[in-house]
Amino acid sequence: MRAYMPFIVSGVTSGAVYALAALGLVLTYRTSGVFNFGHGAIGMFATYMFYSFRQHLPTALAMALAIGVVAPILGLIIAAVSSAAWRAPPRPPMSWRHSVCW
Image: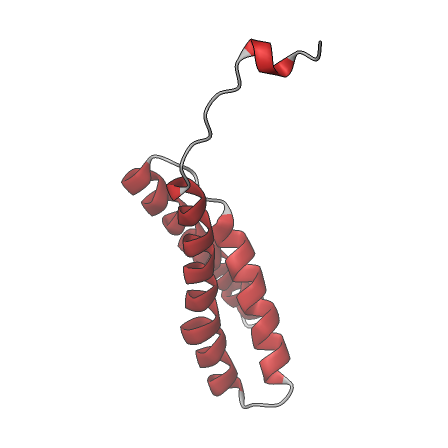
């Protein structure tokens, strides 16, 4: 049993990460009706920043910075950029006469 313990811990940990990602996708889909695949990008960027912070800071502080500061700021930036695109006034449609060169 002792030989299987690292595999059990690794499996449970991986399953917990997958479950957390799935819960984020389901929560976003249920509330807005749109699949948001940006969770993976934000998670990847936060992980990369954790790795970068970990080179110079203790693990707990690097994790707190990556999860508590970097990921929310990136989410706010993505939300601001995407909502600005939705708030832009629509361009008037180009009529057929203006699109043909005489």
